[in-house]
Amino acid sequence: MGKILYLDEKESFGIEIEESKINAIYHMCKESFPKETGGIIIGKYSSNLNRAEVKIVTGAPVDSKCGRTWFHRGTKGLQELLDEAWDKKGMYYLGEWHYHPGGTPSPSIHDIVEMNKISKNNAYHCPEPILLIAVGSPINNWTLGAFIFTANKKQITLKQQNE
Ligand SMILES: [Zn+2]
Image (cartoon, rainbow, N blue to C red; front, side, top):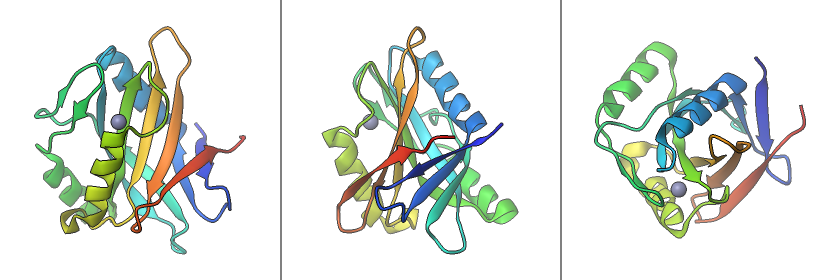
């Protein structure tokens, strides 16, 4: 399976994610429909730091809570997972993914607040977290939006590149 690349307008920064990982996200969304769900994304940056490579997508931790228009990601088990990813593969926290059933692939006001909090939270070691947003339903097409929240509170939308 191939990799999908998302780039910002200036093509100065990109997110690379394997198609199989995107399909894994869509699968978790289908299971959760019509409720929201989400998880974290783990991977690494390229050596020149201009590309994030997403290698692991997790499901919602068991202490997460969700409804049709909201999702609170839990934390149970994540630290152990991140420790293991770091020890075995040198990978680390890159950001979050969300499912917005029937919504648009754009961050909600609440998402923006949360991502800016993560950016400032030293526990995450991630000043510029990524948010991937899956949109669709079991009977509709699926799409994935990609966003980066910069340390100065700017939100950058990345576009999927043609294969
Ligand atoms: Zn969201």
